[in-house]
Image 1 (cartoon, rainbow, N blue to C red):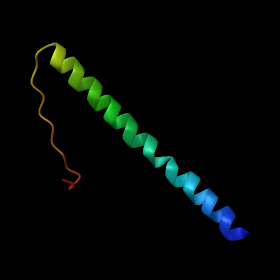
Image 2 (cartoon, rainbow, N blue to C red; image 1 turned 90 degrees about the vertical axis):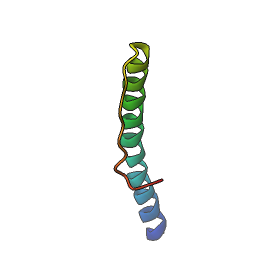
Image 3 (cartoon, one colour; image 1 turned 30 degrees about the vertical axis):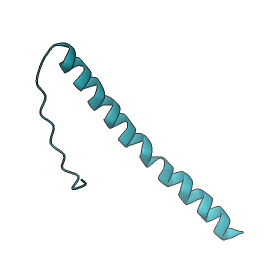
Length: 51
């Protein structure tokens, strides 16, 4: 029973990390849309190391 409670607690705690990345992506989308509408160029670097 303790393992189940611990598992639920950890899954709830780690699920909160997804919101931060979603907000960063939404902010990036907003910046790109505004730049596109005003015909500006935007350079984006990816430092995550992922392909």
